[in-house]
Image 1 (cartoon, each protein chain N blue to C red):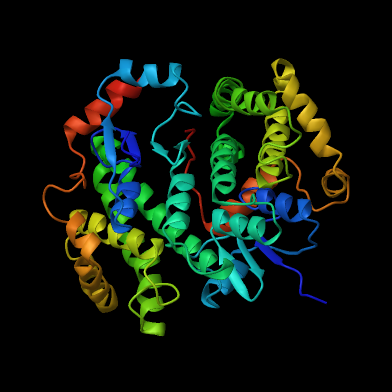
Image 2: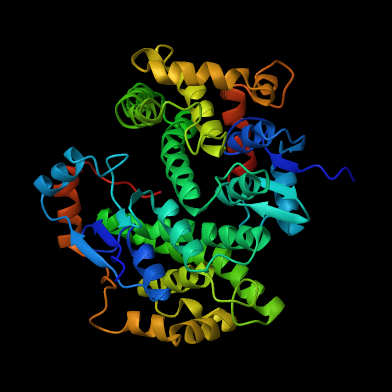
Length: 229
Length: 222
């Protein structure tokens, strides 16, 4: 029995959530160790497990991988979610780059002041509806296929679904001008591995709350004010 | 139609510089189009060149590529600078992403307000000397090879070389505690394609100045 990947992070979304999504979509079971105290983090640091002193960290295939993008790329390639050749991979990388930038606007959201949160919410919705969603809407419309790249389920599809759901949490009707994306959302959500991940009891993490923010600040000694982008 | 990759960006480093380094290191000649006015930028968007309305843009092999990482991954893959298998690729990706975090601090530096510049410079120095350079110093010391991954020249080496020079411009003696990196820097400087790129007249761009900052704000300001 192959050892399962083990994820080291806080008990919350943050940068690890995209990795949870991708492993789940690939049908890969994984274990998690949640950082709750500063001591745990310092122990990991002293043990030399964190190459650049940061999490996410994923132990898999004999490696202690860090850097979210590197981890995701590895998983995608290993589980054939990265296209069939260099050009498909390039397309997937471009699309994932876009959804990553969009989700990046949401990453710091829980750490913002109430006033900044309102401004950021507006920015997220504006960018989603004017810069990012139109691109994927057009891609799907132009080729009429079920998946973004190469008529095959890939990392790009998983990442886009994750982004859509996250933006919808900020504005529930944000897909109203995007019929292709609505159909895409329904389609991808019904893929068995994804459907399972979307059910209660899965390892998907809830919307970050104050407790999550508190934990991150405590473990990382990150007490400075976070400003919006 | 020359068939060479065509780069569209401002006439300066920014996010395009790492791409210039990688193409140069791979021995690939390229053309450049410089954005100088808002109108040029808006026309590019209107004509559908910029997938997410952003540059860098690299036209290569019939694609209009955007997203810096996607572009570099493609170039690295195409020119055999991305390792021989998935595990080497993973290592290269980890190293590149780490260095990229450091480079991000340098990227943003010219745009920080005057009263924050000293603090930001201190952060760059601290991160380089305490978080990033020690990692690569150790990697090189442990395997004793010339290159970071798989005993072969790769994207990771190019990225590290670029970062070392960029940090040195801000913190001249930064390599003083890192003998392996000093040797690495010399070796990289002597590789023919890199040596050529480091000579005057190459496509390498100078450190960003006030004029560059001004142009960025002018072209992209809403």
